Length: 130
Image 1 (cartoon, one colour):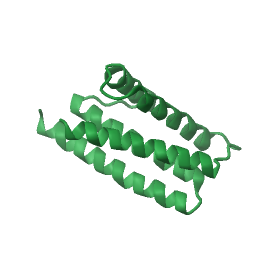
Image 2 (cartoon, helix red, strand yellow):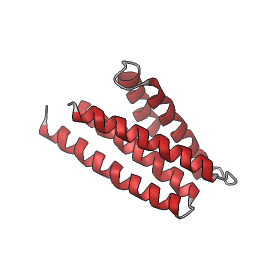
Image 3 (cartoon, one colour):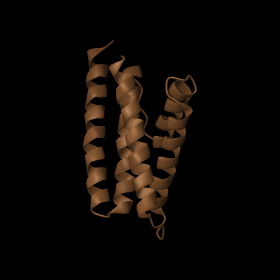
C-alpha cells in the first residue's frame, strides 16, 4: 500500500480523535448544537480515513458517505448499523447547522455523541486490521 495513503489515513484518524475531544467538551459545556456538529465531523473524518486507503476523496459530504456505504457497508466490511448511524448524524448535523429554529436536546446530543464514538471505534478497529 502507498505510504502517502497510509499517512493521509493516519492524519484523518488523528483529526477524528481531536474532533471527538471537542465534541465531548461541547457536551459537558451544554453546547448541544456544537456537540452534534463535532460528533458528525469526528465520524466523517474517521470515514475519510478509510477512504484515503482507496485513494478517493470527494468535495461533497453526501458523495463520501455514499461511497463509504456502497463500498464498505454494503460489502459488509462495516455493520449496516454503522451506515445508518452515520446517515442520521449527517442529517441531524445539517438540521442543526442550517435550520434556524432547530433545537438540539441534551438527549439527542448524547445519543449522537455515542453514535459517533461507535463509528470512530469501528473505523479504528478496521484500520488496525489493514
